[in-house]
Length: 109
Image (cartoon, rainbow, N blue to C red):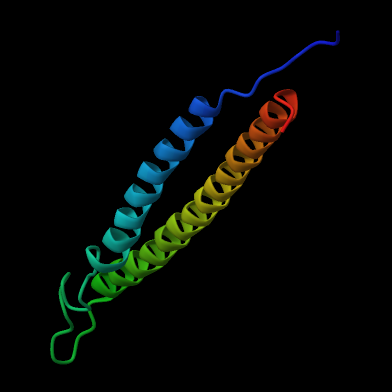
């Protein structure tokens, strides 16, 4: 008889559970980066009459650029983890179905 293999469905289930936790945490990170990292235009100082506070403007602009970049990274991670989770759940379902069909055919159903 040929070599046999067996897929550990409980390991796949554990992976799906862990991915769900990561997705939840990424959802929190997404909300945090979007809503908890805001900086008002005058938070670092504002212009005075007749004078422009260039350093404050540069820092505010740098913050905005970094915030946008981090939001993009978190969104990308969320998409990757969601895709990986979906594929893992599908693989688990497919293996589970195959196992049930094999067990059924072995018992003569």
